Image: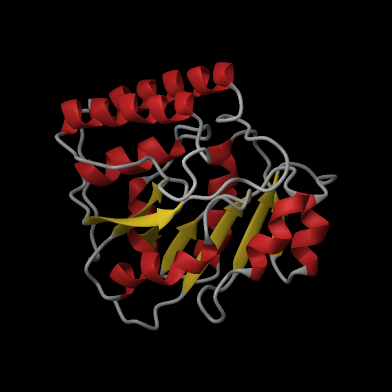
Length: 240
């Protein structure tokens, strides 16, 4: 894939008006186009801020994190992008790292790149219960698939043709786990890049900010890890 390969950026952002403006400001110039902000409803104040910063805004039609990512991804595919990047709209994922995350895809050395959360600068950015849930799911993926992954990050980028063939269908917080499991089973080249993870700006995390929600999400992620890992038919992704 050529260094000039076009990349679209999808940003799920629910009720993040305090964060989305600064986040969009930090996107490196000429790095991604279009920038797609997906909000949960027409009255979400995030939308007005995002539009004022030049982003394309859309409202997801189904409930769920995966549904937001799916909504943006379909627009990215329709735009002709050869790479689709994802990061969350709460400011925790740093857009300044987009060049590093996209580089292995543009160099043709990876099919999927994970922007793994580095918590050394901001150790409190991800609560202990959220870290524990991630570790349990990652351990399960190692047991089931032999994969050694460092994180289940919201910040990631994937070749558009590979994404199409993954046939994503998980519309909940299991979206990332489904993508990782299917990518591993399909033999995609996965690279992991450490990126500084920051405290969110304003509001409260829909999952990590609440222990009960984190436990519920972890159970969902474990279910996805098991169900997609034990599927009978491995995916075959062409067009590398």
